[in-house]
Length: 605
Image (cartoon, rainbow, N blue to C red; front, side, top):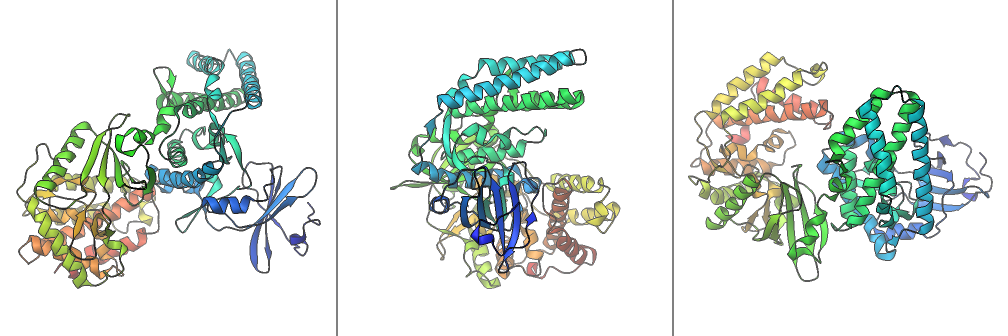
């Protein structure tokens, strides 16, 4: 392809073709004055003000150098080349919660465009075209059914007839959908992750499009493993509509999901791949059907019903990041006069009632937390909400001032002074995490790791040696008393005013257990060579206050067991394709140093 008519490309002699993607566009990378650029040539709409539009909406994107008409058939766009990891290939490295958060951020950014370009009703022209597309797809499927009727199993035929009837009967779902201005091909592969920033690509496709079709490849993939694509779509819709998704739009998602299934089933029949078609049918029935009805709309509603909560009808929502619990979502809720935090928690009714009792106990014991202003059940089962007052304090770890052992110890002592009020308190039906439960949890992780053939790349010692270390250190808990504990004490779960006024957050993890298990999910940080000394002081101050000024020697063994536990957690997460490989070698070396060689944990002495 020649680019003689494009002034910016006149002196460029070498273009490297980029083969990724399924579009009909031509894509190249090239260098000019030692800077890397991206060139795309295709049949897309020219929008000369696109750069300003994206900047105004706060959408991170590659800088546009120029756009123009190449010839009567094609237009072109030149962008600065953006480095980053394609989100599509990173999905397996993150829990669904984080995929939701990525989607929410993107949806929130594109939601800014809706302020300038309001949603539109779907046009008659679109409806007519889409209806014809559906009819043609159904006709293709019916042809393949007739061609292979002898080979099709009864349960397969039943499903194929169901989706045909469904599409013929429910076209009204599309009539009540909306045309939304934004990215017209929203899917993980069109976004990059670079240094915690999400960058939109294929930005030239910014226009009006029926929303369920714009998101089709995010929620209707036929690979039988699309729960994370669903989480991405949930987040995007919640961000786009400020947690207030119109129901009619979601019904269109039901419809176009089945429309997409027709394509897969037609292809499988052509290929005579009945085994693959059975897997698809089984997956759809198990995940997206209930009582003979398609429930994509239910799956995608996610947190959208919070707008029904009386206190939050006119609020704007921003996702608060940081929680690693896949069941908790926290939102900052603001309007001109008020400011709240909203927490949405998936759990059993009994556990939620227990948490409310814990909030009450904290209040009775004058342990500072954000006041609860509203709570209740969401529309979907086992999903509850709590609305807290906003307290304008900072997270401890957000302040660079806390860097020394002494500063950390000051706050460790202060936190312990408050939480010691829980000693001897009881709550009915509170869960207990004792040495037996801890032992079984660790052993479960260890057994799973050693089941992988390639475990030896990540663990230096044998399973027998590992169990010997566990058996040794679990004994260090036997002299310890069980008490009511917070269970997740860390800097970012303590808000403060830079003085001695504190607020405890994430107070839902209450349990009966050992003091050191307050630090179950973050004590491993203290073992790192470059660990913040304030963290050492924080743990030291807390544990020394709880033990009359002297930390018992047994707590060093307890801490080492938690280090080993964390190490096997990150190894297992990576082997199961849920986590990253980056920390494994570091923590393997730390276990070698502190557990195998027995180095003293100085900050616990």
